[in-house]
Length: 342
Image (tube, rainbow, N blue to C red; front, side, top):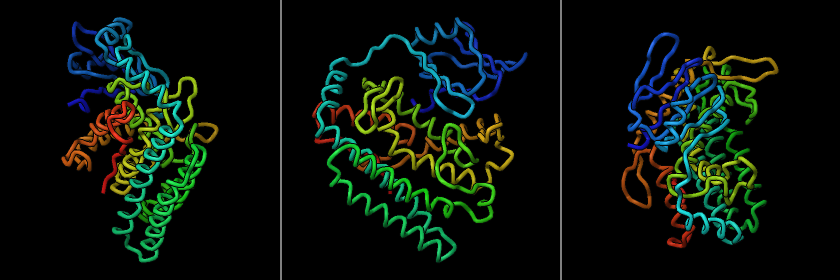
């Protein structure tokens, strides 16, 4: 399965080299892993991981993408072979991006998917709340997000859509502490999103998970023959994967749910993080490994897709959604349909 074909390397100072037709992972004098290259579609490294030049050449030849993330999961660089995407689809994507009506409709869909999924996170929290007061607050948050959804069709330009998305995110994160078990709130208190760098443990965890989802969405865009740099909701900037960022919006609540599970089930604790000079908070090496394992396991969870009426592994959803985006761009469907869960 494609979701199992990405190798994540989180161990600091690991060395990756080519060994005939196999990728070998070494730490010190020990060989920790051997993976046949034909089993891989991508390699993702975190932080200070080294690679041999012959291995990088071979990865490019085999069209196996190499993604370099920093220790906190932030994207740094990507190595890939010659582009083989569908030029006709990319031409259509560029034409569509210039059509304001289509760009606005697609931006509406991306934001609606995110808000609907975020609303389900709050409503699920309300159902599981032990306190009547907290249940009421979470339900009120769900109602606020429902109001944002109702306002979305009235947004007549992209800046207004982005404003509604920002306001919905503010309402959502204002209730986020209530989704954390009371006995864990001191260690993982949340005062809103901080990035570059994250300033607390929960932000460090969310940023790490969002980075992995974005990397998967970028790979899905490329697999579908789309240009990941040209989006509809996100502004185009040099080096910014705007379309992957559009696509990842509907998946952010899945990252949030995993973060909450890891905290509430005590799979991570305060020792999983380090604070750097200047206030940046980062995940420890062993914690990154454990989170990657949990992320991979969660991606194997099968969820019902409303369009196809069948259960699909969560890890394959970005690939499915990228192809739905391609169909919308070609004009084969009336517009893009985001993935939402119930």
